[in-house]
Image (cartoon, rainbow, N blue to C red):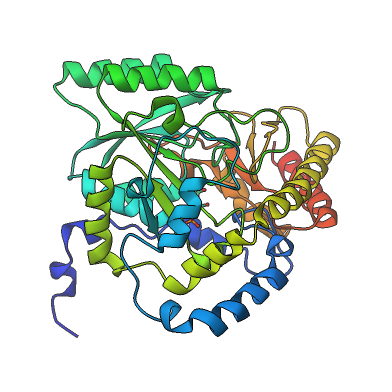
Length: 403
Ligand SMILES: Cc1ncc(COP(=O)(O)O)c(C=O)c1O
């Protein structure tokens, strides 16, 4: 080993922080712990038999292709399928395959977008709270993140405009506004179309890009699909990220970015340096799976399973949670966000919850600014319905004992 390892780290590697969450999540690994912490899809939603059939056919017919390097832009068949958008609700996106690049799931998209836009000290705007993996990706590049509070319709446009105005007065312009409009992680809130239009108008007025990250869009239990920011704009002001992680399976590690061609070209260059290409094997597997037109039925069954779990969880909350605790009932997605009384700290409560064998993610992890100490995120997709009831009962008891 070299003698001066601590002196030779790069500036950006010095910004990498061991995630508090990862450390806390290690404590949830024990089999006795009922974990509402991760964002994992339920394994019984994975279409194992169908994927196996597709896999065998693929290996019989095109093994030389799928075992070889692929292009950085991604599998042509998959990109065409995605642009045709056969499994999604009508999107109204005015795009061709030149507007779409396949990435190694959406986390890579967040990293590459950070890489191509952020210099140390650059401002970006994020929701307060927001997806912690996004915050971690942007932090690595030295972003100065400005958190905008959410109300029950998502990012508050009055606060957003105030922040944009203040930056303008200081001669600064944020590189982009990061938004998770559908069943937001962690709050479960969906932004109605009227709010999207307002936010888009502000983005145009202040000449700022919107980064729309929407992994949960198809997991809607009730209500109407709201148009994507991309479809509401269609002029290149919006970059949209999608993924198969929550609707097919995360192990494939396939996501995509849809954007103006100039932005796609830059992402392709950054991706070339990062990993040359996303696995041609899993890309073609996903493409052939889509071709069989099985996605519609799969989505229906996944949505039905998660809707039932959401209902079981809400019922258990209503039955067991003490007065003073509130939560958002999500219309889709995988999460429910809870607020404890102001004086309580979900981080302090965490160890007590672990003693009672139940786990969640602490709210403060989702805030770029030191906030959210009395909040917690609960996942309802992974554990089975009986375990959900038992877990909520345990959690309610811990909260009651510490109120
Ligand atoms: C909002 C959001 N973006 C991106 C991701 C990353 O997902 P993946 O890399 O599996 O596509 C997640 C995962 O939970 C997420 O919640």
